[in-house]
Amino acid sequence: MSQLRTLFGGFDVVLFSCVFGLSLMGLVTMYSHVGDNVFFNRQIIWIAIASLALFLAIIPDYRFLRTGNVAFFSFLFIVFFLVLVLIIGEVTLGAQSRFDFGFFSLQPSDPAKLVLIIVLSKYFAKRHEMIGDFSHIFISGIYAITIFGLVFIQPDFGSAIILFFVWLGMILVSGIKFRHLLTVFLLGAVALGLMWQFVFFDYQKERIMTFIDPLSDIQGAGYNAYQSTVAIGSGELFGKGIGYGTQSKLLFLPEYETDFIFAAFAEEWGVVGVVLLFVLFAVVVWRLLHHAVGGATNFERLFASGVCILFIAHFFVHIGMNIGLLPVTGTTIPFLSYGGSHLVTEFLAVGMVMGMCRYTKTKYQAREILEA
Image: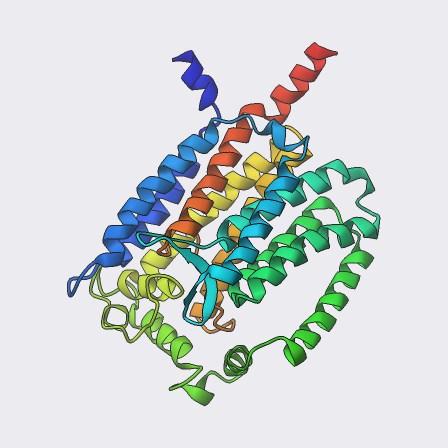
């Protein structure tokens, strides 16, 4: 019993309850009173697997990530798979972004986000006192742009944007100087201009132009965004009820179980449900920030902060495109959207944060005093 307490000493009941609750809210949004419930049935299995992954992730002693080459080899490993998926990956909706194993598919871009957080956490933690040197921002950018580029050319613009926000958020947390931040934004603006001219596909440009004028092409590039806003507005105060969403269940709203699940959720749960969703997610952010502040070393603090940034980026990009404030990029929302790769990765990240909580700042300082 004492060994179990030691292994699971960092388990956060509040954090787990919120992420599990969000997953259940997404699950019931996939339920329909008409037709088959394929996504609903499969998602039950994925939630069970993801929950198991969370509990297993609490067990290891993650201090090995601070030293040695595990983080770097993990980076090389995920880069290899991102290259491999471009060669033999399955093409779905125009993107070659996943491996098809028959009974399930694996999308490497999801664990790539977690690997990037690990690599950046180690890099910035070891150079915390020298973060004022712009070269460290440049080198960390090489790690990020490598994964970003491989994901972007799949093409998966949504995941690529999330990877950029993770890198940007982590350099801000690490203590970047204002003039360096301004340089980063200027370089980003130049890069965006070059990508618009030479990299973006026509359909990606159409989505951005439709974002500027959503009603210009309702039957074409603007169709998804328009149907999403209709679904959200039709939910009103209390929603239409679980399984009774007409826009989603009658397939006026495409990809309602993944890219537009917030719209489907708002249609069935209404404003009351949306407020509950925001409250649960706010608690998740609060608990992650709490663990970041109490981290034993800079590595644990940066890792928990990186996971928090990842979830926030996904959350606001997904909701932004669902309500018409951002271009449609095909981005999931943490814990709610259908799919195994992203859900297992998210639960795994939360479990790793909990595992690191066994060695809080206070316990770490006490151990250092005893060893001195």
